[in-house]
Image (cartoon, rainbow, N blue to C red; front, side, top):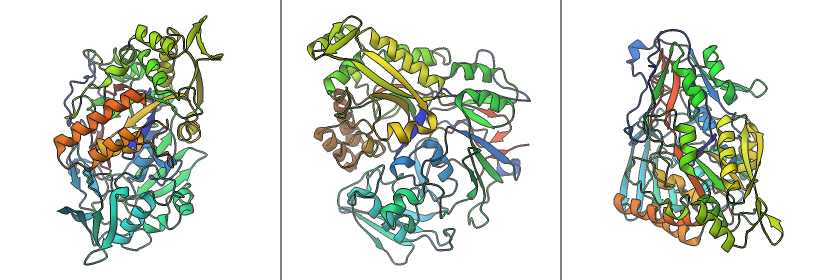
Length: 565
């Protein structure tokens, strides 16, 4: 599957990543099944090493599904997970998300960030005096102001992926100096630590809607991070980032990181041949099996906020515009069978499905709210009959129209293909025909998902430590802006509950409200969560301070990662 981040969440194509290894000892024993949902949250598996044991220099070769469609992460086409990983090497993140899902200030960028007042809510940021953009100008309150104005939703010419948090701000002001930022909210915003103003972009990018939407489509124009762009080669399908001598923080161990597009079926060979240094196993039993037998590669695992799902399209142009029809079809999909087929041979114990749109298994807010759409083939048939979709031969019809659902998947992607075929077979049993349309992975998001060109589709959401605000742009229905609600599904009731949850400062109450919203989202047939990824990667054994990072992926630790030999 492809991956996408929510802005907060990142989207990835439904992955069937391959797992491989090469040269030297392996710690992968023959009976080494991966841990399932009972694996402890917050425990990273990264071969931690002191800086003195990590060599200076070297090139880390990082496989990706595609190059960024836009280097502006906040623009609608920019939310690809691979792009975010590249962007984070060269743009300022105000916060560091730790393995245990806690969040701390990034001291390279900010001296401090604090809640100065609760009513009205006021947050004050103190920017490091050392922090400079690549054009020589200092990071300032004006960068914050420009981001707020472009992302608050008031100017519809800005094609934003999310307005969450920014729409709640009343004003951004200069404090005692240009490096003092005072942000006053008109509505409370609980999860202000994390994605707000992060990554930070220079004010020039928001100077106009044209610049915001297209100015950074080909390359990042101004940076401020430990690395900078070395090469962008779309013909060779690679991006290199190299150490930036202007970086004011701790010097990175690596000299260069090369992000290279590698098709999913080729990942194992690429690692075995020394062309890449790791890859995400995802839910590919073939890659897992192959990785276990390879020398010089270690399989590392940590629970990661990464899950696979199916998105349904509720737009008027889709055959699935009726919520009751979407729920009926969801009841015809056996998520447990799909999960077992994908993960059953890979993990110890039973593979578990995910029953919540906000919270993942093992997290504090998790409740299984999926009963309204739980698998029940006979109930699905009955609901379809009641909706007027009568079985004629093998396929149901209503008003002379066949129940044919177009399921768009990226290719080459064995996992997406496997999931789609399982769904196709299951829905055939209730009288729905599934037409699987495989499209090039490089076109998948921009030409299909982002513009609603599907009836059903599947990819992975990569979430974060702020799941409620991260998910708001996915489940809020705004007639004037798609945001990340690619299926155009929602209700005023869900919108109100999400507003309440994001404005509730009491943690327990916020989780309770989010679960109420989740129940309503299930009733709408918005998305069908499938399973949480095991969080396993295959990585060369001499790689240090990198691997299965748990929640510590915003940003990754690009400073201390490297090689021990």
